[in-house]
Image (tube, rainbow, N blue to C red):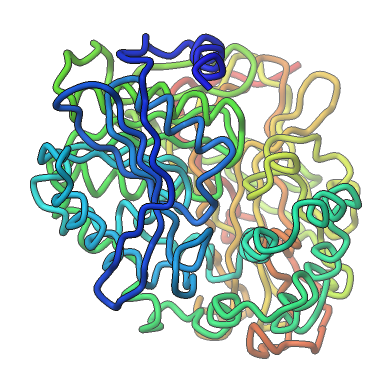
Length: 550
């Protein structure tokens, strides 16, 4: 194993190991307050006074995370990797977010009783392994000295119901992934080789309340609950999100994310709350999706640096607190004092004939498209759970559909650099009261390929947004934040459509409950773009063009 860790450390360009001797004790029982026994592995370095790093996970303690445990331990930390309840030998039933605060705090009490305990703790992990950190962070006391939170957030409710829709692909794919951990390895490999046909059928299935059984063969309790408890005021979520107490967290926090990550907006909200409370978190956002290999490498390097500085007390590297990757041609990494950087809001207006320009429109005939939930507008790339399907892709196939409107600028004479939040405002008229509005910003290169940069969706229903006397609704759409450079000769493009399925559950159009809806109603949508209804996109400009032209 030592040869493997040496090779991995060299390939990942990690700091030098402090010891090659690590003792591993597996399946250690940890009894929590309700009598359930959780199982953990302990990686103990042959170093006196080493502090502890805790990783709590529902994804098992073998495979890559076993290598991770050894790599961190060789760099001078006790590492405890614990399976969340109901997973990989731990007792009880896995119920997402329900038990993580109590189980985490009970595990911390258990750590305090270990003979090698020094009184200082760090926590490390990505995705759900980050949620469990936030679950205990406000109550862990002075013992918690450092957190490394990777592609995660303190509150998952808004990511699950982005724009008050439902993140169907993420939630159902995750449910299928968790259930797949209980089936034999060979059966799982066969399903993957076949392209996961059961999951594909489930994503297209109605009603959604049956989709979990189609995908997995069993009813998944949390999937059913998330279909029922989707309203913003649902008390169900109050004990399952931890953002309200984030200002009480005293441990230094390092955050790593990607521009195409499913939790990016929520993670940047966490960053903003910490900054408003006077904290100085580290923030790194790269050109990554939720499962990008580059993300895992960067998070390990950043995490080890953070643990060295704030847990082990070693000298801190001299660097800016924020590091982001600017996408597009001529972008690259930028070091910043804070996020978002100072920028000038600039509006790009939708124009007649499919144009997009900084100048406001004087007049314009509305553009129309027919949205049919029986043939929902497909999602293509973007922030998805599965890395192979996520990220920036050529959008021309979806833009060729009649239910997708596009608005494109003239070729840029100078680069346009944007960094920060992106927002759209769409004025529309619809014959249906229940509908979705999906807006995507793309970069059209010199070859005509249309690469998605960021996007967002909002669900419209009666009473959410007022209608004017002519029936026009003004819909604000918050897109994913971004940092991007549009090169000279490229064009900006804005897509407007009625959905992005299965990333977001289709809007059936009849107002039936999320889980039981089966009635599909199609209808026309009109997008207005005139002086009284200036639909458009607001970009945070770092560098704006003086002119646009060929």
